[in-house]
Image (cartoon, rainbow, N blue to C red; front, side, top):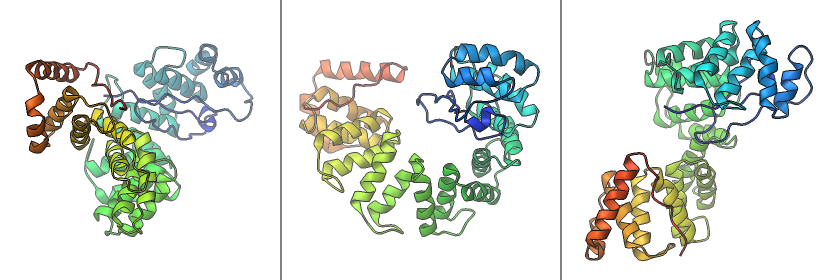
Length: 362
């Protein structure tokens, strides 16, 4: 399971049940943004937090949180969850979010649901996550509606109900939630819970992608690439792929790499093609691993390296992609030493060691 980082908005810190959106995996935890000074007992804690003085903020907020101040409880939950001035402690974060959630704060209910769904806490369970998301969703919390909709879509933590999921997505999407717009778009694209309507899917993907939703950008790029419900446009496809690729979507990275390799919508650039194949390959995309192996074998966009080519081809094969043409071409150059090194590198990687080095320009 992965650590979940939450962003505290001014409204949340002020106890107004604002959204605490999940941050992309491996992204740094954003700090709370304060637009104006706050009055009342939380003013010193808020001022310290705004200035990045997390220890002072924590010390000022703790006695207030212990007396039931929801704003202080939210702040402590965020500090312990994000590791701001302290070692990240999901259990402690859950404790403080739980206290605020018990007082009916929708933002805290959502945050607690996220910890129950994704966090490394002993009491975590999908059933508990669904309960907290439902409590927040009933108060109109948009991100909670989107998360609860996904649970109804998959049947995780309770019954599957695609129509209920669609209703939740619609509610949050109308209010501008990017994740809900993307999820609703996928229902229209697949004809699940909604009639199949690719034009509506493209509209929703556009709304979400324009807010920075990476999966929506990737799907929209595929639609532009193939001319599905939109006019075929390689340049627009490449721009959408790039937006998603920068946020770590492997499929988008592979698609962007092919765009650079073939000069589709962008100026041809073998070095950038190798870079993006490498990014996707390190995230486990077999197609990217195979194409990166080919580039290393040919010395195209990277320095020629038979060992690297063999390593990436071996990983692609483990992922189910066979490339007999490439394997037969490189086989005469694979020495016992190369074979042993690659096998050792793969075992090390699979055991949780460092991933193979990314592609280097030739």
